[in-house]
Amino acid sequence: MQKRSSLESRKSQAIDEFKYILDTYIFPLLQCEGSAILKIESTSSKNLKKHIKCYKKGISSFLYFFPALATPQFHFRMRTNNPSQDLGAAEQILREILRVSRFDYRTEQFSAKRMYDKKNMYRNAMFNVAFEVGLCNWLGSECIYELIRQLRDWSQKTYEGNHVSFGFIIDASKKTTGTIDYLSFLKSNHSAVFTDGMSSGIKLDNSGRIVKYFSAIHERTLEDKKYMPWTPYDFIDFTNMCCSENGSEWIGIIMQSNGDMLVFKSRQLVFVKRNGKWMYLDSYTIHETIKARYKLNTREEETLYAKEFADEVYLSVLDTSFAHTGGCIAIIDDQYVDIVQRNCFPKDSLDNNENPSEKKTVIKRLISTGSSNSEKHYFQYLDRKLRIELLSLDGATVLDSSGKILCVGAIVRIEGGSEGGGRTAAAKELAKYGLAMKISMDGCIQCFASENAEKDSIEIFKTL
Image (cartoon, rainbow, N blue to C red):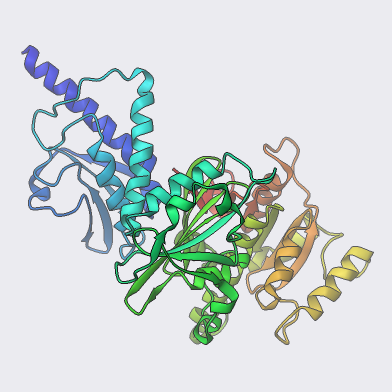
């Protein structure tokens, strides 16, 4: 009886630890809905080759999370709104973390390692290292973990009194061959003067050897000009180099002078490390949320223009995040436009000519001359750099559901007793009439929507 009690206790602890791993490191990487449901059964997990599987049941799709590839005694299930999403990063990270877990999930006994670990301090440290190893396994290069480790060391020191930045592109395939080990040279202070972490960098092979020095703008091709990646404005040329090309798979790593570390793959920014914490960039959820707010009268044009509008708003929010200026932008549903202009920012409305001001006059002129389209007052047609600068103004930028600019830098009337800072309060107030996003000066982005304006926000950067 005592053995059975001990086994049940160990099994309960093993389930709790697996759930902790999923909550902390795996769920933020995926588009999931609702809460994880525990399933105490093993039949559906036989002959597994992966820890994470997507199954369809009728019109719904679910992600299943298995702690072992043999016949685990339990698994978790969550609904997903994106059944076609790439599970590769989550799979590699989960696999690596389970290797250092206290419990052996492959047996019915759930045997546990005997270890002193007061308050799980050692466990969390091991899981964090395993997370980075799993991330590097997904990226596919042997040298990326060592490169990240050395960049982390550089983030804690200066060169001639200044923090430095670096930029690298690594061939995750083994097709490219370089010469001279750059990882060894990176330990030297002499390496601080090479690359600027934005437009110049060094290409390395899979083992960390030098392939070539590059200036991203000089590497730009005609094809790159046609392709606009989902990445901050300052990294467009660099990001376009992080792609599959002639059998090579180029992965980008940038460390900025403020210590932020950026990871690029398939012409996208996918991971960011800020203030010592890894964050996953959830482009899909935010993009789809924005897209749902765009309405047109003709169905044939709806898909094309909804995507264009969502692209441009999303990119501008991302640009403002990396400019570290802070900002607030809202998209108002059609039926509330008049109410919002009248109640939230009557003096700052660009349609209100009764309250002229120097600021409003200058903004209207900049908008009218900074557009690439005859529809001069539509946000998505403005020069991208101008959009960053407009969003950086203290106050809120507000659009209608077609992208028409209703105000820029508006001070929004909010109810007394609002929690959080001014931008958060303004975003929550405007979200009651549609959708609003608040960009903090530290770069974090929160999205509030009318159906849950007073509840938890959607975050573009999911902290792990």
